[in-house]
Image (cartoon, rainbow, N blue to C red; front, side, top):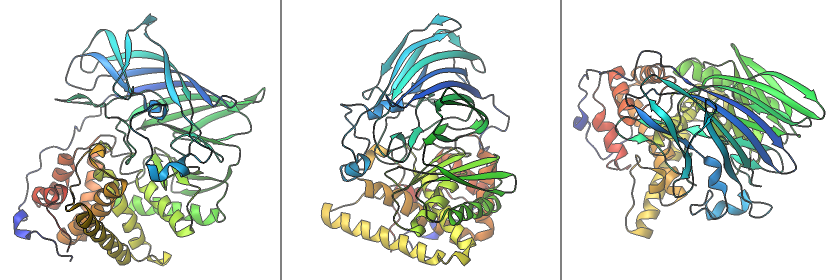
Length: 489
C-alpha cells in the first residue's frame, strides 16, 4: 500500500447509512430535433432545432438558457480556446475563426424574445411566453448557422476531417438552489455539462463524405450529389458528427454492440479495433453493461489525444506511437461509462470523470496483462509524474496548489490541470482500492454506475455512493485528496 500524509484513523471505517443517490423514478427527458445542412464551400452548418424542453426541476421557470459553444471560436474572444503552446498545432494553416449566429427563436408559431449574453457571448437566454412549471414541457424552435474555423479541434475543419462537436444550442443544466449552469468555454479540459436527452437528427452533406456520429444511423440516401442521413439517439448526453472523404472503415462486435472504426492514417486498424473490443468487454465486466448498440471510434484531426462523445470517440491522427494510440482509445472508451452514461459537471468537477476514467484505463491494462503494459508501472509512472510536478512548481513558485475539486478556470496552467485531475485522480482511486480491497472497490464502481446511469452525479453523490457500497465512511478520505491535504511521499 502506498503511504500518504494522513492517518487511516482520520476516516475510521465506520458503516455509513446511505441516503438516496439520485431519484429512482424514471424522469421525462427533453427531446432535440435537428435539421442540418453542411455547405463545404463556406464551411458552414445551417440548422433548425426544435427542442421539447422538459422542466425536471422543482421550480417554476420564466426563461431558459442554452450554451452557444461555437462562439468560443469567434474572433476577439477574450479566453483562448487553446494554450499558447498548442497554437501552431491547432492552427497549422494560420489563425482562423468561427462562430454561431442565432437567426430566430419561436414557440408554437410565435416569436420569442431572446438575448445572447455572457462575457463570451456563450449563452442564449430565451424568455418564455408563460411560466413553465415542474414536469411541464415547452417546444422551442431555434434557427442557427455555425461557421467553422480551420482548426484541429472538437469543432472545426482540418486536413483529414470535419469535426462537429458541441455545435448546436444545448440546454444548460438547471441545479436546484443555483439555477442554470452557464460556465464558459476553457482551454483546460472539457468545459461541458448537459443532461441526457433524446435526439432525432437529419443532416445533408456532399456525397463524397462518410459520416460517423452519435446515435444510430437509420437511413442514408443520395440525390443530386448530396447525402441525407437520418440519425436517432435515445438517452444520450450530447450529439457529435464527424465527416471525412478519407475514411476507411472496419467493424467488429462485442455482445450486442456494433463497434465501427473510421480511420485514414492508422497503419494497424485491426489492432485498434481489437483494443476497442477488449475495452468494451473489460468495462462491461468491471462497471456494468454498455447500454447502446453502436460505438464509433474515429481517427480525426484533433490537437489533443482524444475526445469523448456518446457513441463516438475522437482519436488524434497526430499521435506518434501505436502504444499511445491504443492508450487513448481505451481512455476515451472508458468515458462512455464515466461522462456518457454517468454524467457530472466537467467544468467545476473535472476530476470526477477524468480521474476515474484515467484510473479505469489503468484497470484495463491490469485486466489485460497479455498486452504487455504493466499496471504497476503505470501507477509508478503516475506517482513519479505527480511528485515531479509538485517539486518543480514548489521550486519555481514557492508553493503549489494540489487541490482537485476546482473549476477549470482555477487551474493556472494545463500541466497543473492534468496533474491535479488525471494523475492525482489515478493515485486517489488507487489508494482507495488498496484501502477497501478489490472486492468492495469493484462493487462500489458497479453500484455508482447503476445508481447514476443517465443522471448527473455531484462529488457528494459519488462519495455517498462509494461509502454506501463499501460500508465505510469515506468522506474524510475523499476530502483530504480533493482539498489538497494529501501529499504523496
